[in-house]
Length: 285
Image (tube, rainbow, N blue to C red; front, side, top):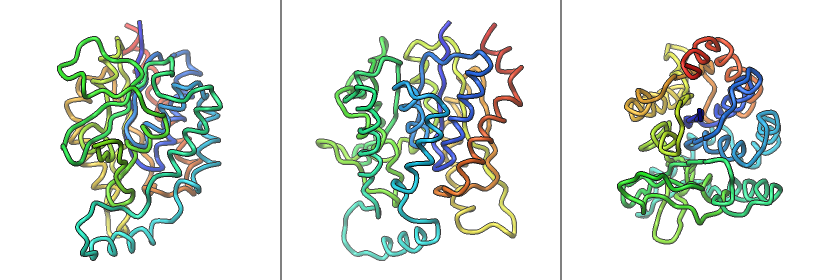
């Protein structure tokens, strides 16, 4: 039986996926197929290339500041500035080149240049903002598909992760040939169906619980709440088709709150341990 895992986007909270993977592996649940969107693609791609959850955790801690060059409050100012611009262009305030460079370097350390060279089946959704269409970066074309042109295999792992992680306003679109790719969460925040198409008999979906909003909530809390509501709504059908959904509560961790990486890893680990009996019951029968 092949077990697949689908990892949701969620900014810096994505490191919680590494914690979840570690808990699964430590408890005898091996992952055969993996997919992830946006931050989920960052973890999924590293895992598929052969990095352990512990190594992924350390790599996030080492490289987070290189990828995220600012903190939440300047981000709000930058978004305001972008909204006031008169040029008719699709822009963010970061190009995402840092993500691409780091991931290509990490891939080369494993002897990998293109996504098609990865052995473990991997799927990374993105969205062409010009076409309003989902595309999938993958190393293995599914046997059954209505649109083979939707799948892209001849691409560097850095470019694939960058494209899936290009969150609107924060990052510029990732231009590849005629495409302008943006965050895959716009259409497929938890790629359960794509993981299933790769031959998974059982699929575990991992997403983030939306934080409660109260009188103490700030602008970033509201942004994160909005992202979670949209992502979970978009993924409703996908989530229903999974065998089990793990909700990770991250206690108001901001989209780019790199100071809470340690806590996020723990949150992911704890989410698996909490539901371990249920997970084994669902995927082992």
